[in-house]
Image 1: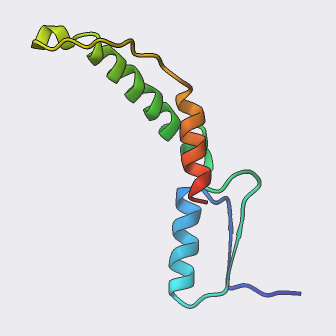
Image 2: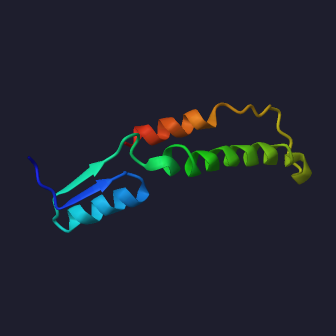
Image 3: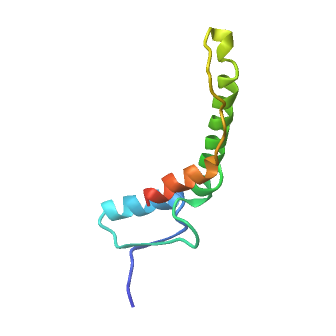
Length: 93
């Protein structure tokens, strides 16, 4: 049976920080995550929500460019911002 100095349950931001600090201190660390590393904020909540808000803000701003003397000859179409965020998150895990 393996023995650990520190066991962290949940690899959200706090769990990842605890694992990082523990390993830097020379501890034998075990991190446990049921779903996706990064937790709810990274994978579902905060960051995806911010991505959707950013896309909405950009589309809104594009609709007002004529107020600033610009003319765009295109139509802004929103793809799937959540899928773009997922690809970026999982590309770096």
